[in-house]
Image 1: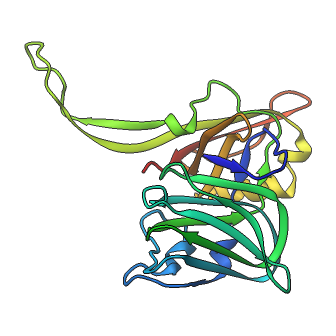
Image 2 (image 1 turned 90 degrees about the vertical axis):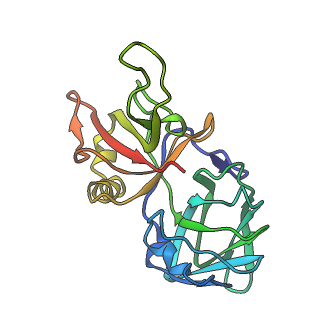
Length: 259
């Protein structure tokens, strides 16, 4: 799910990739034994932070002021525990509210807001004690246009692997065991201006993707709020190519986090 604050966000695909959290100094209000806040530094979905008391806070201290327009989360149980998230930034003299939301599920979600700058950010969590593995703060990158069809919405791309057969040799139904195996999708973009594909911002994302670093992706932020996910590279390199004499195209095969 993507939540948008009071501004007119573009409906083109939104990528959040350059996570400020991973290079910041993080300070948590509390940490449960074996669940340190340092777990939020690596983007891994199996290394959670867990506070011992609520409300809980995580302060993000940067070496220098940086712009941000996206706060995102994955691998959490905030909805189950009735948690509300408040993002604030330090303006030099006081904490200023940026955006507040209560997630509607334990799936990954994005909070999108107008670009703001600060060298200190604070996330406050109210509700019940919860766990969280992925927290992402960055300036989002909008990819012009739309994802080229056919497109499987990311929130319904999960797959299940059967362990055995569902039918006997004589044609009778058997209940096969199964296991969840995650999700995958293909993201394709055509009719792209060469100046965008060759530009520094998209090239930064391309290099990030090719090195199998994770990112958040929302296909249609205004019209398809659930069509988003926490993604990483599954297939080959992302390489831009001319589709004709004028425009370029690029595609990416991604894996998706499924809770």
